[in-house]
Length: 361
Image (tube, rainbow, N blue to C red):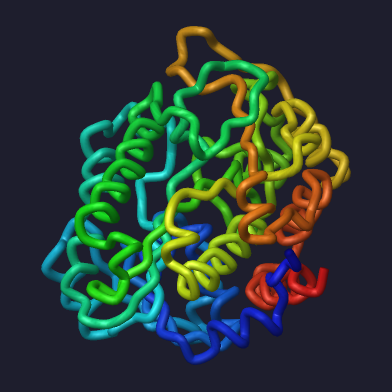
């Protein structure tokens, strides 16, 4: 199947479509907003205010590319009002508590935001009296991780050690329950809704300033000429540039809208197997691209548990959707580092340049 993720296909499908994005002020949400804006979509975002100073959303906001609603996904009344007044054609649900280590500090809130928040948007979707396609974003960490050298596929058992991973596995179950109960793909003419979930790998890219994520940690240290402190140098992850899963989400949205019975379900979006790198290799590539820097191992067995080995199988997305990664891990790191090296007043424009270059690949 031909890969449909190019500028012409996105403009053809998403131009003038009304897109409701939750979590639009976050890292991935900001990139998705820029990508859909480039495609000519009409966008309303619903999210908490940006958490970090000089966030990517703050860089983009002066361009007026989105109608922004600052509100909590747990506020079901407000969410319902915003959704129904906008009457979206598509929903991309990214709002979440997205950090593993933070989930140990706020476990109940993590479940409340990730599980109950998703249930809120799906309940509001029931009341939307029009055709709508919804993509619910979860994570590669939804699988019962056996810490073995295997590629997890969509039919593998769900699970989770830490509260974040478990909350996202619960989110998948919640989506499946709503799909069976209210949005059955074999009765699309009755409810007019199409629903799928997307599980991405470890995404990197310009504009991510989150704590306890490897690339922001690297960049903060390099900017300050400090030694990079690495918690888990031997941990292996499916690294990918943020545009890779986002292109998959948009492609899934296109096909799901056309054929809900066929494309309802879960899809992995990850890199090729050779791009499942250990952290120390990732750090070495980043330092080489930056041109300076050093790192040290600060691993501590008494720290909270984080998975050592995690790999994704994206065969289903490649075969059924015609999606495939365009950037290897080294190129993904290069694109990300290039963004951080841009002057602050050039960073918003550079996002659109990278989007254009990505879609041309």
